[in-house]
Amino acid sequence: MSATGNWNVTIKGPMGGQAADLELKEDGGALSGLFKDRKFGMEAPFDVGKIEGDQLLWCVELDKPMKVKVYFRGKLDGDTITGELKFGAFGKGTFEAERV
Image (cartoon, rainbow, N blue to C red; front, top):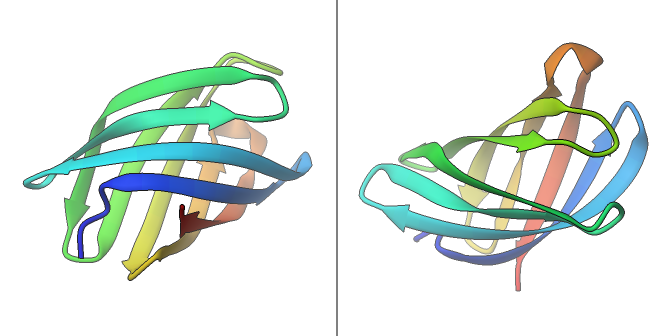
C-alpha cells in the first residue's frame, strides 16, 4: 500500500501531546510532503524522505516554538503509521498517524 495521502498525526514528546496534519507523496523510494503543526499554525515542507518496504523516514525543520529538526521513523500498516521521532537535542517521542 502507498503512503501517499493525507494523515492526522498525534505526537507524544517532551512537550506533551501535539496534533498535526501530514501530506505525504511517495515516488518510487522517495518520500516528500508537508507537515502542518496545528498548535503553532506552522507549515514545514520536506523532500528528503524515503520509503523502504513498510518503513518510512523523513525529517522536518520546525521554527516554532523553537528551531529544531524533527526526525521521523515509522512503519506503514494499511491506513496507520506508527513510529518514533527525535527532536534534535531535545529528546525523543512517539507518533501515530491515521489516513484521512
